[in-house]
Amino acid sequence: MKVITNFVTSAAAPHQFPTGIVPEVAFLGRSNVGKSSLLNSLVGTKMANVSNTPGRTQTINFFTVNFGAPKPNPELMLADLPGYGYARVPKAIVGEWPKFIEPYLADREPLRLCICLIDSNIPPQKSDLQLLHWLQTSGRPFQLVGTKTDKLSGNKLKQSMMALSREFGSELLPYSVKTGTGKDELWRKIREAVATL
Ligand SMILES: Nc1nc2c(ncn2[C@@H]2O[C@H](COP(=O)(O)OP(=O)(O)OP(=O)(O)O)[C@@H](O)[C@H]2O)c(=O)[nH]1
Ligand SMILES: [Mg+2]
Image (cartoon, rainbow, N blue to C red; front, side):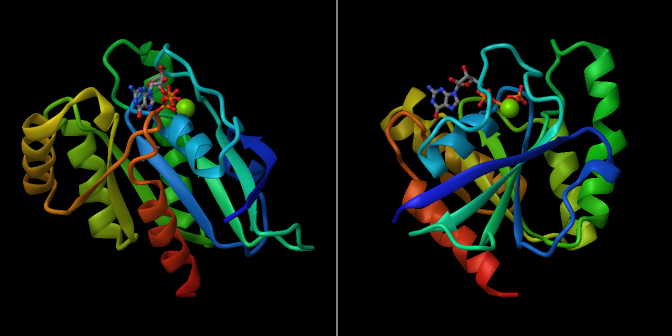
C-alpha cells in the first residue's frame, strides 16, 4: 500500500489545531518511547523529528495521509504529540504538557484513535497508567503498542509484553521500527478505526 504524507502544521495551543473533519489518529506516550519514530515507520518517510534527547517533540505536529494516490482531500490525519513523564526532561517542558495535550484529548472532535506507546523494555510506569485511566474514563478509543521490541528477544519479550498487558488491562501490539514488526497490523487497526465513522 502506497502512503502519501504531508506535513500540515505544528501547534502549541488549541487555537492552532487544524480545523476540518479529516479523521485523526494521535500518537501518545512518554518522552523517548518512540512516537515520532513509529509515525515515520508507518508512513515510510522521515516526516517527524526523532532524537536521542527526550523531550524532542514539543508541539503537536499534524500530517495528512492519502492511500494509493494523491486526492483532493486527505483521508487521514496523524498527530505526533510531545511526550510526558520522562524524569530527565526539564520541569518546564513536563509542566507545559497538560496545557495543550489535555484540551486536545478532551475536545478534539475528529480524533478516532489514540495510539498509546509503551516501552516494552521497562516495567509499567505510573504516568502511562494515568494516561490510560484518563482515556478509559473519557471514553476515547485507544490501542496500546509495545515499542522497541527488537531490544528484547524470545522469552524475555514474551514475558514483558504479558506483564504489561496484564498491568494495563489491554493487549499490546508489539512494534519495532528496526525490523518492521507490527507495521501491517497497526495500519489495519488504524484503517478500521477510521472507517467506523
Ligand atoms: N532499538 C530501537 N530504538 C528505537 C525504536 N523506536 C525508537 N527508537 C529510538 O528511541 C529514541 C527516541 O525516539 P523518538 O521517536 O524521538 O521518541 P519520541 O517518543 O518521539 O520522543 P519525544 O518526542 O521526546 O517525546 C531514538 O533514539 C530512536 O532511534 C525501535 O523500535 N527500536
Ligand atoms: Mg517525538
